[in-house]
Amino acid sequence: MSKYKLFLLRHGEGAWNKENRFCSWVDQKLSEDGLKEAQDCGRLLKEQGYKFDLVFTSLLSRSIQTAWLVLEAMGHEWVPVIKSWRLNERHYGSLIGLNRAEMAKEHGEEQVKVWRRSYNVTPPPIEESHPYFLEIYNDRRYTTCDVPKENLPRAESLKEVLDRLLPYWDSTVVPEIKQGRTVLISAHGNSCRALLKHLEGISDKDIASVTLPTGIPVLLELDENLKAVKPRQLLGDQVKIQAAIKKVEDQGKAIPST
Image (cartoon, rainbow, N blue to C red; front, side, top):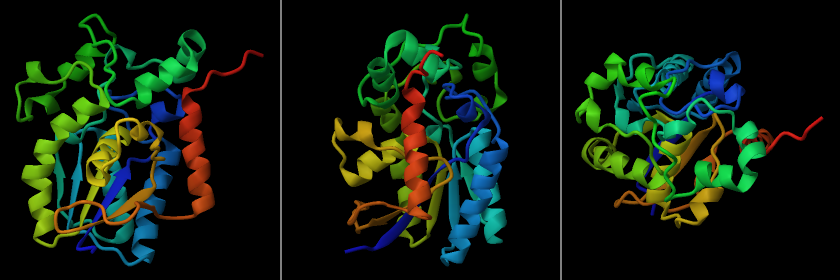
C-alpha cells in the first residue's frame, strides 16, 4: 500500500551533456535547452497539483539551478533547498571531460557502456595531472563536506555512488519523508539511478538498462518501509520521454565515419 510519494529529477541538460562529454564533478551550468527543461518540469508539476515541502540537491550548480527553476515555475521559491556532496554525480575519474562517442569509436561501444552503466566497474582514478583535477579539488564547496577533502572519491562505480549516498538517505532524507513531507531530489543521472536501485530492488544486471532523461520528473510511491509499491512513473508526454531516453542511450554509440 502506498504511504509516501517521492520525486526524483535528473537535472536539466548541461553544457557538457550537449557536447556528449563525461561531466561528472566538473561544475557546469545548464544549457539553454536545460533551462527550458527545468522550467517546463516545474510547470508540469504545478499543473498536476504537486507541492513540495523540501528539496535536496547535490553541490553541483546544474542540480541546484534545476531545483531553483522548478520551484520558481511552481511559485514555491520559499521551499527550503538542502545541498550535499553525497548526491553528486558519479565520479568518472580519468574519463572526465572525454567525449563518449569518440571513446566508443576508440574503445568500442560495449566498453563505453560498461564504464557508463555497469554496477561494479570503477573507471581509472583521476590523477593530479588531469586537466580538471585542480578545478574540482581546489573548489571551496568541498571544504563543506562531512568528510575531509582528501577522502573524497577519485573515481566511482555505481555501487560506490550508492555506498556514499545511502548514509545520507537514511540519516537526513528518510526522517523528512516519514514526517509526511513531500520531497524532491534534484540530482544527477547516476545518483538518481543508484537510489532507484535501492528503492525498487533492481538487480545489479538490470540497473544497466535503466535510463533517466534530463528534466523529466520521476514519481515513486513508497510503502511504510520506503520501498516502491508500483513501477516508477516518468511524468509528462510519453512519446517525448521515450525519444529523450533513446537520445541518452545513443550518447555511448560511435559516430559513423563520413
